[in-house]
View (cartoon, rainbow, N blue to C red):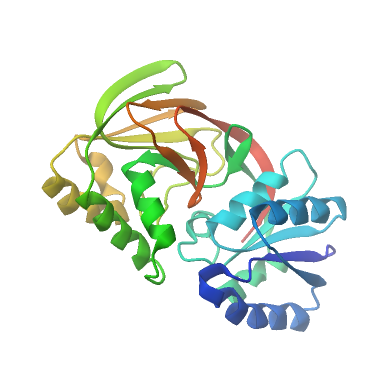
Length: 289
């Protein structure tokens, strides 16, 4: 390819897992004569600065890590001529999965030789952008636990869901999708740009990265026993057939609740309720297989 690659890496991701993966990626880039330089981030805002600098220099801004750094890098490219690439290196890697990117970061490097450009949508809350799914309610508790646990890999999210369920009590939500309001008592609300979160939990199996809409998934109140017995269905996306699950599509989602909740997106806190989530259609150019 005729562009250099700015490899934006969080060295602390996955307990140092990124540092173990990085040499293999660099070796592939050298063997295939791809010009690159490694940029180690200190935090998410630093990742955004590096992405903007890459766009200004005419380089590919490559997010090497999990969904959090992907969302930060992609969001920083909005309004620029920047080009995004993604190498999966986090715990869940749900965005990479949705984009058809190989699970191995070395295998994913092939995108620098054989690829095409795809315009992808992003989500936005209070000026902060995300790539995958913004959710709250039960998901707020589960995300907080997952971020704090030392359970490795994708198992961290299943562990967090079970832990969160122990102390959970239903909340009253009001969700307005493109002006159409729905009030319910239940578990959670998810505004999905992509189909999965939590390391392969297909909460919104029909969501597409480039359809200009968010899939809004709500789960109404059921017993904890039913909730936990139905949880395995989320890994196949078949839970959407259950009567307690509702899916609507729209470009703007307003969410309120009867008690405080943090809205999480791409695994990180992004806003407090009440919040309005919007889609940014075709916001970013991306290299995909």
